[in-house]
Length: 101
Length: 443
Image (cartoon, rainbow over the protein chains, first blue to last red):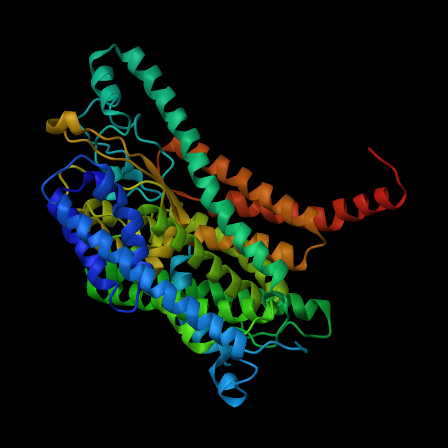
């Protein structure tokens, strides 16, 4: 899929769909949106739909940042306190490391 | 965990994909094409197996400019130009395919070498290889592996034929559904298993919520990229990853000798299915060409995006690309040049977006060969030798593609070289090198 070849309305529609899709717990989709449409939104010369695409890219970036913060915080907390939580920690764990910490 | 069921399903779908693809497309270069041969056939890189319907269109494979100028130039000039262009494109395509094939193999070998799960021998086998290899005598073991191969190949043949029949009778919804189910299984279930094994190997604690988010994102974006629209690089990356995952499953669950015999048998099947007139893959490609539809874009690795000015929309190309897994696999197995057909009236927008297509099944089996060499071969010598052999085979196949300009099976040459190199390195070169090193004799 080459963005160059698409007409502007389709670019906007694609950007919007990626933005909306990210709300389904898909921050990766937002990341793809930001990276893919970055050039379109900020580097290319102005065209009519560009403003809307810019909004979507900015909002996707914001949502992505939020998710990254939440995930990082949760992972840090989990890694730090997992052993202390005892049973709950084990219940939450997908893999439990072997050996003595 | 009972791996058989899940493996079976994915196996069904994957084998369908894997079987040789791309039957030779005789009509790849449109025979009755009214355009002067200079502009059409010559320009088109022959390397593609999947002579997609687009490829089948006339259209100068080569640059729009060249087409124009060659049309005007003398025949001899045009011929020379075409030859050059064909070879130049052929070389470019070889490079364009080296990278994904190498990446896939690197992922598989890295996993095999680090995560012991995939090289541990287990008694669990796929339902397609019911005969065990833990037998007392060598003869019995050989017999069992041959029987396993026969069963596996028949399954593949049956699924391929089924797929072609479905395609012929336009049961697109069924095919579509099958394809989606298959990629769902790969993207979610297998990657979940893979992630679990990697974490266990590195002894890290991971919690369920994090894993859920990671797998959901990976799978969700994968489905969107592969089956709908997404950046080309990401789609290629996902295709490489799912091929690697599938290859890892094969490496783990196929018994030793059966794996080698199956590799050999499937190359032969590929050859037959693609080149013989009644071969299912050939019929598939021809049907797709007649209907002017691309073949299973979802299951073929394409190195450049097809964009035909005049095509209804990119969505069409991708929608029709979702042919059944089998087809995808099969088509995946062929190498196919993709060429854009510039429309005569849009000269200013002529784009040569030549790409080459290689079926995912080819990726899978190449990786199975190299992975098996890494898992059970001596040391890195064997692995590297197989890797080089496969790349050489790929080069030769693409060269033949440039010469014949028909859909060609990508498996036979590479797998043959790979097998030869594996066995000779393991049994001849390896001990030789070891002895030399042990005796400090440098040559």
